Length: 130
Image (cartoon, rainbow, N blue to C red; front, side, top):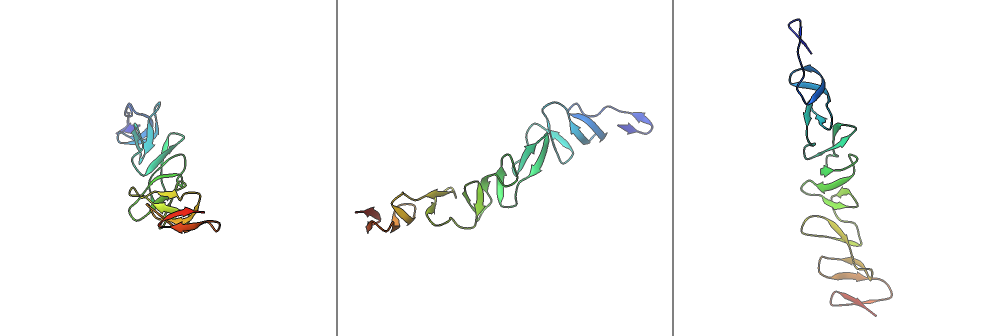
């Protein structure tokens, strides 16, 4: 980069820059986030073609794309790589805020019991039977 009429070398992590602290592309396997070349993207970002991009607002962390969530912010539950306000029917919320499918005999459930059984079964104290 040029400074006071002289060409100066970029940081060793940068392959191009417009100042010592402002990279525009990174060297080798480094990732560009907010004009800084880093070893890894920060939490809440994912890497695409050497650049860190921000995850969806409800994701605390994501992979491969902004909507491929692997963790959710407070108040949201993780289900099929999406962050939802509530778990969908047929699932229950675990202690780590993920949604898990109910047993196959159950239409609706909580973490420890079935609340609605499939039509061919009856509910016996939270367990579905014939």
